[in-house]
Image 1 (cartoon, rainbow, N blue to C red):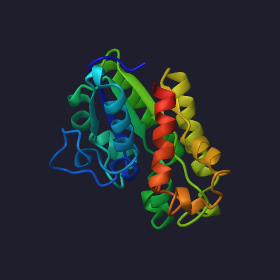
Image 2 (cartoon, rainbow, N blue to C red):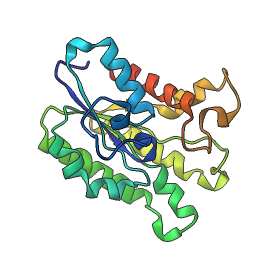
Image 3 (cartoon, one colour):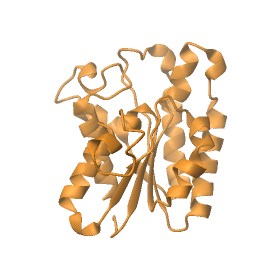
Image 4 (cartoon, rainbow, N blue to C red):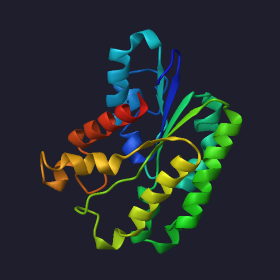
Length: 213
């Protein structure tokens, strides 16, 4: 359960970034939180739980893979002293290698760097609650058969890390799959197979709140 005065930090790549401002980074306006699931989630929490006096931050950066996330972790996570840290990272670790194999992040590197982030965060911020969100895709747009099974393996790694380190796990892929009976057109949810539409972001927001609250 979320607690009074929690500081919630959303971290990740462009899906979390969602066009957030780089100037106004501390407010609760849409410019600070972007136009994606982080903002939608913040809006619900701030409206429904005003007595908790929550602080909600977004430090997602478009294009990040797990090594870039690790490079900025001190400044963009630990120094902010969050009490809840939500991480969504992994799609670029597969995607960027499609055009340039030199940009690949091998599965073992992905797992080891991610695990190190978890351990460093727990050590620096005793009592922090970690929320690990699984990466997701639909096979449309930029996503084709060459993405598999690698992207599924990254999802499995996140689930394993969440289990092994007693983190809250958010099954974003399952949530999107479960939305398909309402609208079977994949692009309705993920416009290019990777980036959510407004409807897709709302599915992510609902899944996050169900797992975290």
